[in-house]
Image (cartoon, rainbow, N blue to C red; front, side, top):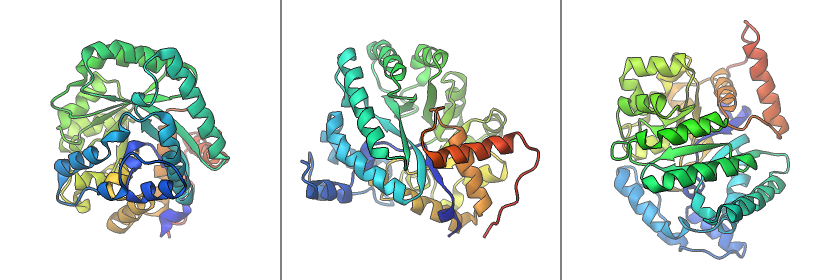
Length: 343
């Protein structure tokens, strides 16, 4: 398939969401202890929606408070799979619970985590991290998380934040001070919006959240004005096709707005979200989009360039990612689009 010849960039994936029976069996075989039995971690079924995802979350609950060392063999497994699929750059969402609550200790352990990641990249891929902040975070925790985010960013441990959770029950207006502080210090802001809520949630993510990227964003396509804002302001959308189907956000792939986004020339990427929970991988997501919407090689090249341009880490270490970035810069400075082979 044509997507296989194009380098890939993934911007929307939760580290804990990698967990499934396959990775758990693999790390157990390598001699690492497990917190849950592999057979208890069952992917979300096609008709289970949010209830199925809630069940999956319960099955991996012991990992929600696991420390960073527990995640190393999981991350190692995931990194190898990404390399096999031609991924040159990836941003993963990680929980602050992986690190000590004491800020100085947390910064120290995050640095150790980062050093481990750099060694295991081996020039094949670049892995960066976003600190995941739940919408349900208590008000008293927001100030502490601002301090934590800034301290983590200062050492290069994270390049941005991600806000996730139930949209309608937990408005992001409570985080307004955080958004302004982080934006002032150059941190990227990603907000999950338009997955379970409506177009107004996406609008709020832009107006109040100062979002650089929108996770999912499906509901935005029910409002022409919101779509125009996303396009005109060049806000990147992180589409997660299988996740959107299994969560009931779209009934089937044919109804996914990714084709509309392509036709409008919007900036978007293709992602897995929680590959363990939704029983998918990046190659499979690209293949389904190619097969359903007849995306061409030129489409996938554009997706790769737009995704890399939307990254939160300005510095690139990986040579393949640097080459892709150079192509993007050349296209931006040229009025001519290069001729590519679609098949």
